Length: 543
Image (cartoon, rainbow, N blue to C red; front, top):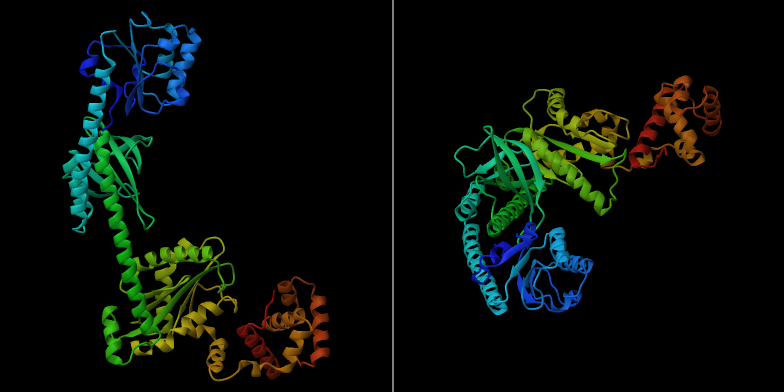
């Protein structure tokens, strides 16, 4: 509740007072009252003060000086001025009336019989009483919402308490104007015809706006309080203003309701993250075989609603910017990846709500039940299921890849877990543009990966390939493209953006350097395998 100039006019001492000018300022807040007989207002005037004066120091002033004086009062936040007649002036100066009118500063005239003392006492008593009333209201509101917070309230519980305090129907809406809860029996259908933001005042720590809505051909007002959530989503408290606008004292309850909703949001997000972290740990145990025996595996499976008897595959979705996923990322890049991952997992969870998953910064690994009879059938199912999400997120230079492991039981998952990750990591290198790939789709790379577990793949790269790499990477690239193009000079030149004669010259030069026989299938197979191994080991970089 704010004490205003209009309330001051109701005190007994001012029953004979006259408002001469500045009636538009009757709603100015009054926080104090002072007597002013010197006009050096820059040194002492504070916002919200109501000025009492006999204009002693201004009695010889000009019209412009009075106008400037009022402008100074307004500049420093004065709420109004009360002028006593009959002591030093017998008539209110025209410049003072004009200035108060221009500045919307209430000008109140009292006669010589009215005591400053009585005016000050009555105003200060009202201010003290108001503070006491506000303290009572605050204690009541604080008690109501503190008690509510101990009960883990839902939306409807919060708005019921708010309605009890302010006596108005309250609803909660999401960002799409969908009603989440309401104290009205039947949430109303409405059309917003106008909306404007409210300037923040005392006790207003949230963003407020007032909307005019059309309800059954009737124009109504709603006060809207914007309540940001910790999860990035925003909800809106809508207070129905049926007859009158919400009073300032009610904002205290609205603020408490908004804070309660925010605290509940924080708590729910924290609980959700704790649960997510626990689920991540359980999935991680299964993926990495972190269990002592089958009994412990079964306990983890029960938490994730999985079965030891069913068939599963590990599916990994990875996303990264550009053509190559780098393991070295800045904090901001990590944050951006996590934001993208969160959006993806929400979308995936909506279509695969029962599948267990593990979240990494730019990777989601899922354990998906496989009831299909062939690898291709499962691949088609995954591709068809995830395609809408892929199309929605496939924008800019964001690269999206999904890898699928071989089939196995839950106890086989640790052996299968690395397969889909290898798929998404190698898909770009082997120039596969497919969104979804099976581990079997890696072809020779799959053989090389299995071979690398017990052997050093460098031993399988011929000396001729090493020499070519060291002599000129451009020649190495020419050989790679030439063999991938079935030794077609024209196709090779198109890919490398050079003239066919340039390709022929390079191939002849390579023959001289390495003594390679391009007509020998076995030797060409050995060269191609060496090139693939170089790619796999990262020794080859076409840039």
